Length: 468
Image 1 (cartoon, rainbow, N blue to C red):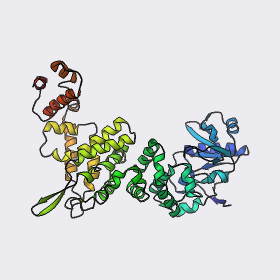
Image 2: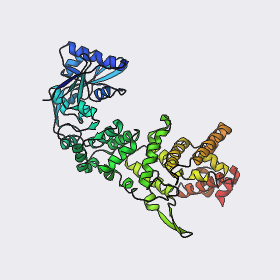
Image 3: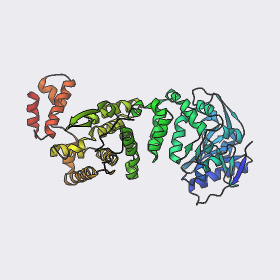
Image 4: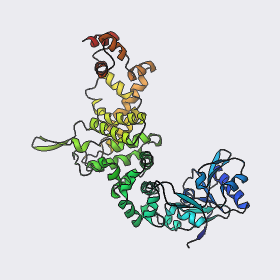
């Protein structure tokens, strides 16, 4: 039996969360129960990372915990979990348990209350299988987690396949921890993930989506995407992204390499932006902004040379991104924002050439303009010219234009630009005496287009267009 007890003193001033968690441990230990911090909080203590929540594991049963604390809440009763409330903080206090079997590759068929050692061995990775006694200031290690933290290794506890079969989401969690902590995945763990990659599709889309968003919002998202590819998980989840590999780019605009390489670089360059800009919408927009390039690639002979083209890849990528995001069951508002940004990421170019000022205003005063500007930064900064450097002038011009329109226009005019209301669907139906239909929407879109191109200016002119 491995049972390392390592003296460990916290080398920072305790915050209120840690102080309250220690109070819980002290109460349970004073009443002769074994009690420790457990899991991720212990890992982060060892790595000197900020702790956002603390889970507590104990030999006490739920009813015994309830008797010791005035404010508690049952949560996960069948798993021996109870929430202890200490002021504004909540702590999940779980009885040491062993999980037996699985019903849906997520939840155990049954649980059995047991020892701290057995509790540690049911957990996913060695780095998450540690306990910490904050009273004695000792790390308790039954799984060689300390060694793996020192060596920066992600390793399943015990048999990798058994750990995966207990919860298929662990396939993705391994990649998330590797990226978040900048650790390597141990060889047997890596091979087990690769061998079982097809099982990822057997769990709910929502769980997959949420885990992927966590992966993408981490600074090492490019590295994580490469690991997803090498373990075959990306092929199972997004074959559309795998298809970006070996799709050539015109070297005069993309000396960085193929579309896949460009995408990885763009994802990495998100880190240059302010933290408040690194939203869930942005990382998915960057991930999918060129998703249709494999099917839009063309070759054109010009002056004895063959040039690579991707006509309409922005529009096609937006359509494809919409399908993928719907498949992942994102909200309508999320999908609309991401799809709009992708559909416009090449139109920024036209804002400085053939676009009317009214159209420019509509584009730059859109509620999602910051998302588009951030996507443009990631895209352009990853588009390296033959000298190995990007040309960021277009992005700088776009920032200036957005600031100018926002500064110069009154609130009333901004609202008018964002919302076209010279003519309504009801107007069109009454004038043409037709019911609600796609034709009504088509007519309204044509009138709106004419307005933003500067061809009409008033409601009277818009109504005349209805009658044409």
